[in-house]
Amino acid sequence: MAEERIGIIGGTGLGDALLEHITDLQKEKVETPFGATSTPVMMGTLSNRKIAFLGRHGQGHTLNPSRVPYAANIFALKKLGITTVLASGAVGSLRDEIGPKQLVIVDQFIDKTFRRQNSFFDQLGAVHCEFDQPCCFRLRRAILEVTSQSESVVHGKGTYVCMEGPHFSSRAESLMHQKWGGDVIGMTALPEAKLAREAQMCYALIALVSDYDAWRPHPAGKDKHDLLSEIIGNLNEATANAISLIKAILQSDLKLCSDTCVCRKSLEMAVWTKPEAVDKQQRKIMAPLFI
Ligand SMILES: [Zn+2]
Image (tube, rainbow, N blue to C red; front, side, top):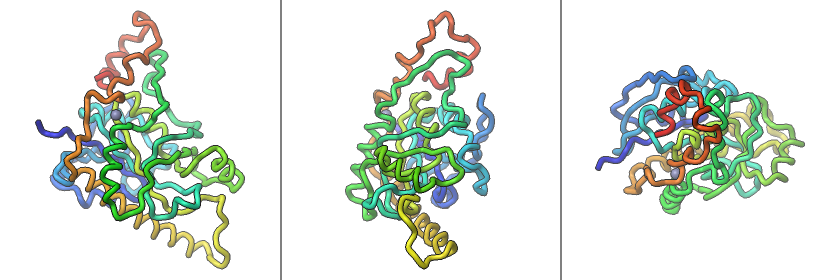
């Protein structure tokens, strides 16, 4: 049987760069109950696998992290029948040992966002999904199998602090995030991962380290322009590493989609509203998420 289509959500850096590698590109405009997606979904082929690509920040990087239509993006991919999502995002490092240009296969999150829609089901009823293991264990294991042969430095796990932004952390906040157990900090993985869980999808995140976060003072003598061009250079290199990794994952003969994965049954026990009290119209609208 042919392998199913894999969803890829490209964050800062990866958005435009990955598109150049995709062949048979076709734009797909998908209607969702949550409005338009960040970009039309780009259907195509990458490393001999069928994929559907979305640039999280929109064409020309117009959407700041608070304005990304996370619900529309995840709903659209699920409506297209996609059950496995590989996402990427730029992060700052909270640890000495996680250096710029390196990659982290995130396994945990701390959610500090506060002005984003974080559930599909506000109008449907009380829906509580498990999130103790927020990224798909099976998909992460598959990625780690590939990274063991990778030339770039890839950290096999890490806790991602997701802040609202758009401003970066103060030094005091950055030091607090370290004490909380954060390894990297970014602005976009949530509520995306939570919505993917509500949509019964397998979700994994590759974090691209652009620099050290505010806990570490900048080296003396470097002006703002030098620092910014260094960060952009780091991000470009991390992006190239992430593209090689994504291609290697897709090229491998690993099974990336599985309907028996625990993520694919996340709604099974999650609807706490009594069946007779669930809003029937909403249940119909949200039907693609229950598949
Ligand atoms: Zn899974």
